[in-house]
Length: 185
Image (cartoon, rainbow, N blue to C red; front, side):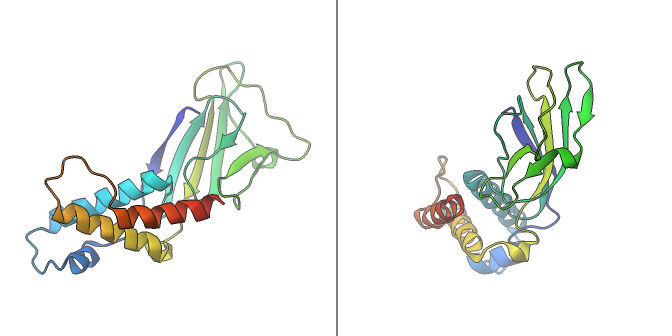
């Protein structure tokens, strides 16, 4: 696998600054930008820990070969496109009738459709590019356990700003590990 990146950012956040301030019991606006930054940190840390997208976003992921095209970020809502570099070095778009994506699997696997085979690739890094939409949907669709873990992370980092080496707070880690374990069963 070559790698992935967010190509279309979410349009909303899982926890708003006002929700975060209420959780932290901050009643003034002096630290609004700090709180917003800590919310972004907590969301990013939890998404990376779980390899999940919380709110709908676009992901572009590349692979070196057709073997084991299993998407990293989940839950996957849909596949937007699959492009590949053919043996002549020309970028081609794979017709959606040529592949099947198991969107119901814990990790979305892309495989050839019935009676189809993968086209020949040029042997180079990132020869296959999959563009897809991942996330639970709107912020309101994100599971409450994830929101609770985020709030616990937020409180910990707000109260312990001087700690240079950050680890997940025990309660957040417990919740996220349970989500990860349940999701990967």
